[in-house]
Image 1 (cartoon, rainbow, N blue to C red):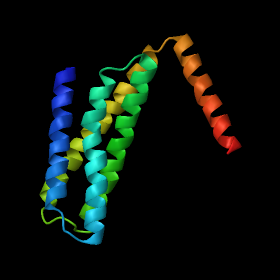
Image 2 (spheres, rainbow, N blue to C red):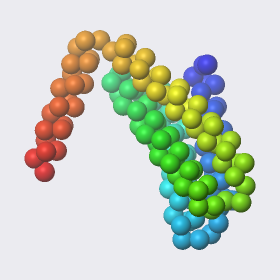
Image 3 (spheres, rainbow, N blue to C red):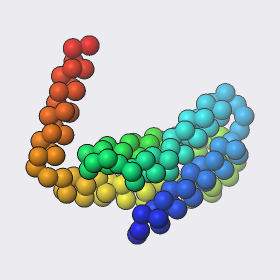
Image 4 (tube, helix red, strand yellow):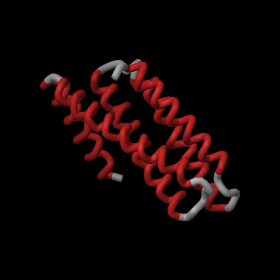
Length: 140
């Protein structure tokens, strides 16, 4: 799969998410989950665009990890919407859930590949920054 193929899939996925949000019931829960799904489900395509212009491998790795997190959030949201019957056509959600699972698999593999390609120095710097950040956060 080329970068363009993946970008096209992410755009189609985000478009499907928009379709779902526009079809949801207009209840308090429906509106809340619709807004949440709209944010997480469309951010994956936008963040992929950012990842293509990453300034380093570390930056690229960070950006694709954000995409993975957003895909996982989208999955939970879709399951909630289906579980609470906040949309009339569960077929629409089922299709998007399948695509979401496939995209999660692609990004898990991409993260693994990117981590393998990092040089020892990049890995050490990445781990040092992660350790430093976690120690700083513990102070608060």
